[in-house]
Length: 388
Image 1 (cartoon, rainbow, N blue to C red):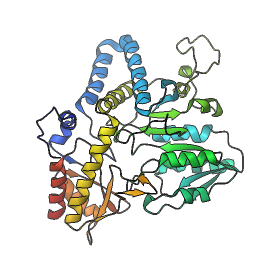
Image 2: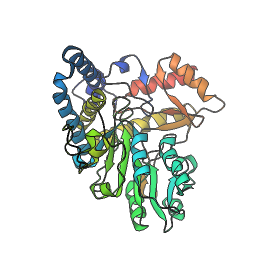
Image 3: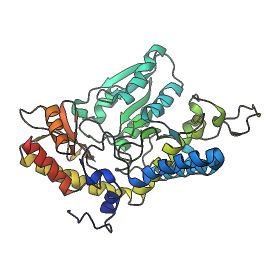
Image 4: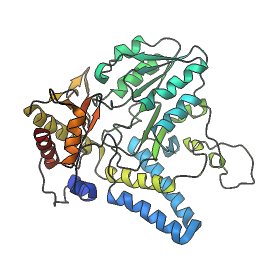
């Protein structure tokens, strides 16, 4: 799998050549925040220069690029562009669903207990409205369909899950969860931030109802720009929130006070856009789409398999599932591991001092390479672990 870093005919090395941070860091922390590729950075420079030199005279061109981002996000998901809202982050997207859903007192939502706070607190916030939050047991993020179903009843309206667990990288079977939710008369809402960009998902084949993810991890985008997918048939079921001048069909005609909401998920984009961030996200998405989702997934799983082999060779314990369970592949780009008798925070600090970036979640070390990572990065981590 090793390649010459100068060989830009390889799509992964070509992508690596666009990422300045990877020339000085063995960066294995994409599950936290990704360093920006140069073309993504350049969008910010171009926008800032344009605004400094020309003010808003070029606003229309940038606004067209917002729509390019929407179309790129839709193509990545197999969705229609009018099913995509451009939001600031995962939390905002999930909160729009949680607060906009037509709850009645006594309804409930089922959530895995191990969810990241972004996919827990928006639902917990509904308890004051009489909505029960039922937490399914998921030791080490290992979610079973039977456990989720045991918490469902006739008042279950939503099952809310992360696609990939942030601590161990357990990948949930979205097809099976969608089938369960719909069989029980509920809808499936997905926090996709730890999978979108590196794991394939086509919402034409996997009938999830809602999905939110921001772009600063595997999508290689900036913080503050993300996507929200709302399946078209559910749009009018939700109470629109964050409504403003840009939510209506006649947006820009400020003297027209007709309240005529957009017939698309863009109704949630109530005000001015974080223009540079959204356009930068579109550039990042296109970098990945140029390679292809299936190719990216294969490379990522090969790389994390290699990482696990090297970690086991130095006596590390792997806490991530690295195979199939209940018929589904549970692997992702996240590898959770520990070194017997070693404090993970001290080890992380020692790695940083050697310019190797990993993280700690759940009092365990977490490595998360991307597809442009290579054997040299893995070797640098192993050397740092053995030397620390």
